[in-house]
Length: 223
Image 1 (cartoon, rainbow, N blue to C red):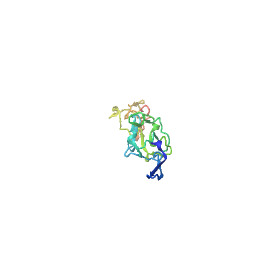
Image 2 (cartoon, rainbow, N blue to C red; image 1 turned 60 degrees about the vertical axis):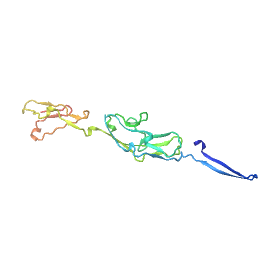
Image 3 (cartoon, one colour; image 1 turned 135 degrees about the horizontal axis):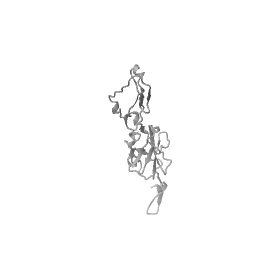
Image 4 (cartoon, one colour; image 1 turned 180 degrees about the vertical axis):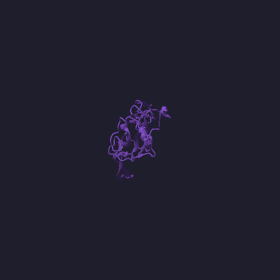
């Protein structure tokens, strides 16, 4: 179709049996719609939902395909197009954390597995669709960025369980006796890999006087 772009002339002639003729020329212009064609992003689409990823979880992903994401408002084949993901500020995506996987069917925009605490945060992305052969076409960008949150599940663990040895434990120390040390087992959090910090409190002022030290790293009291 694009081969016929431009102005063409049509000549019309009428003649009488006696040889009298009349000729006129009309102009026919073929206009290529591709430089100005519009894109429309389908709604609803998968990127309208937010994603949430917890450190050390398996990857989570948006699964999408071109055919259901947008359409071009022309029947003319305008050639190949590009869909590019960026941050909402126009920066390239962090490929150590996020992956634009076009080899999968359907395609995926995913959060890769990570344990890095420095990755915790809220990330916003957008994409732009453009025609490769028509750079003058403005294409279309996502009007509202989509959001991915990376969280540390240890900020709000499901539970923290005290060791059974502390449940109802009675620790006896006779005053003026040699120092006594008591070490308790670790508490168990969920997720199990969360780092715990230990503190203690003795409500009785008199009882506090017999405590010499508490080593939080080894969970050891000394009386």
